[in-house]
Length: 146
Image (cartoon, rainbow, N blue to C red):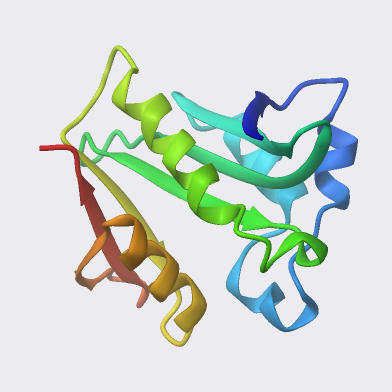
C-alpha cells in the first residue's frame, strides 16, 4: 500500500539517502536540496512516499505565490523501486492531498526537463497535459480537477 508521510526529524535522513538511477540524476535536484528549499518556501510541503513500511520516494509541492496554482516541484521514486508501479498511485495521493487542501485550486502544475521521456509518459498517463515551455526551458504540464 502506497502512503505519504510528512518529512520530519525522524525520517529526513532516510529521505536524503533516496536517489534516482544514476542516468536520471540530471533530471531532479537531490532530496536534501529540496528539503532545505522547502524551509524557505511558504506553503510548500514535503512528503516521503512509502510502500507499506519502506520509504521509496519523495515529493515536494505547494501553492505558488506568483500564479496561485499548486505546483509539484519534485517527484522521485528511488532507483531500486522504479518499474514496480508505485509512481502513479503516489502522484494520485499527492493530487488527492491538494484536492482536499483548504486552499485548493482547479489546476496543478509541474515541469519536467525536455528529453525526460519517462516523466512525460508518466504525467500524461495521470492526466497532465502539456501547456508549453517555461521561461527556464522546461516543459510545463497541467492537471485540472474540473
